[in-house]
Length: 237
Ligand code: SF4
Image (cartoon, rainbow, N blue to C red):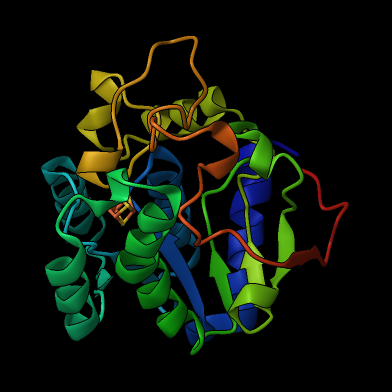
């Protein structure tokens, strides 16, 4: 079976099984736009939800990409936002660039702006789809296609692109004429908040441009960190 069709089939089965309890969480990365294309095809009745987190620090290209996808596919994006009071307290006490001061300060910013808003929504769901791939970083090298997300109420976590290479993802996106963030054309290999993401050299790791001042073992925002065990370890595609 081709990688594309296996991922498409998994999403189709997830829509049938979880219906409105299913969501795709997107940062508008190249993986996520491919998944949006697959979800639109698998879910013409739009039962599943497409979630995105507006951290307040996203680059303009991310919104442009979102708008292009909305226009092409007539989809709705459910935007999630940080708790306003908590964010106001955080900014007023820590300032706007505390994430540069220490790992703990950076993780606190990620928690308030990204992790908590998503967790709040995941609590209401049965399953979610992510664009994670094994190849992206050694922290994701043990990723499985289907996992139980213990950090988020033991809901099902689907990683349909788990075994895809970056090249396969780009080929899929180009082949299907899917709108994608123009940041990729400017040397970015990963999409995140504007002050914490930069372009990387061709030989560098895909996530080298994220929090580049930190060592590799810390390059996660916290959304995908936590206990997740394998529900279907051999579902290789
Ligand atoms: S990526 Fe940077 S700006 Fe965005 S939430 Fe994390 S630390 Fe804050």
